[in-house]
Length: 230
Length: 240
Image (cartoon, rainbow over all chains, first blue to last red; front, side, top):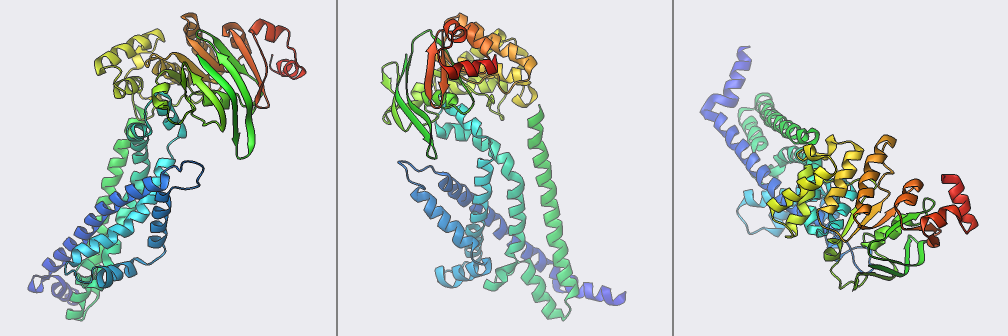
């Protein structure tokens, strides 16, 4: 028992180490939120590119080919490699690891988000678009007023899921020497020669953050669903 | 009012409409009947270009709407369409469903559109549903609202695509009554239907479509009482 207390003391209290965990969590969340926003913006654009309708008998638009190539490349390579490539090759002159990591994860997430949004839009009944068009509304108006609001409800749960994945995936930023929550925990464990407390501690922090997020998403979903039965 | 010339349309190499030509005059009520898969709905959907014809011409008044340079959105403002599956906007209330297009397209102010919607809703006895969402309505109510939504645009012609096919039998009457009352005030309309009794009562002309072509076209008394072709005789013996 005494032993456990000492371990806890060494892992969290000595030299105010708990502050390091909090700072690490800050880095994790900063990257996740920035990447999440970048991912949603890219995802929307890519989804619309993939849904663009070809004219005069062609099979796909030029936009479709570009967007599809992007999704293929991103999904076909490990995110750690993408991060390393961004850090050591694309932005090798940049010192701002936080920015590069956010961008890298955002570009990665965008590919997955685009597929979620595309599926969400396709899941809206075709008749909704036809009804809008038959009244003389343009495609863009019908999209904005009718299809996208309904698609939003469809995509909320998988987008939430994607964001949760994103938070955990940022644990690899240690590769480009950013001190996020995971790297902080592992650094502390190598200083105290004791792995249990820092690693389990970090795991518990991730878990709590994600649990809170899950509860918030569920509440939002419930509110959106209510309008279905009025 | 609408002129169709040599209209052809195929889906994945299968010819659905083969060289169809007809004219629909102002004030006419044209019923389109025929076996399923014969191309009736496709013909109707070509009239407002929800389906793009492969070849042929469609004229609305003096405008060639199959010309890619024609602004089809402007044409559609004058052509109301009612769908088999209602297609009310699921994320909008009944009132918003009706006022959305006239307001967005700048035809009416918000207040005018609301006023108009209310008076139209009164005509179909649904004014108390103005603030409901479509998911809380019965099929018959949904279809009556869908008709009102089209009427709010002051269309010159109404296209009905099997308006009662998705309804429970006890709700068919309430929808047909609304369509009948439109016919009585002189609305030009084209109705794809399986309700032969209704076609006979309301239509001024009936088109029998078979294998992608107009096989027979006559006023209802003539078409139903003395069908010329063998195929129409067979069809009528099955559905009447």
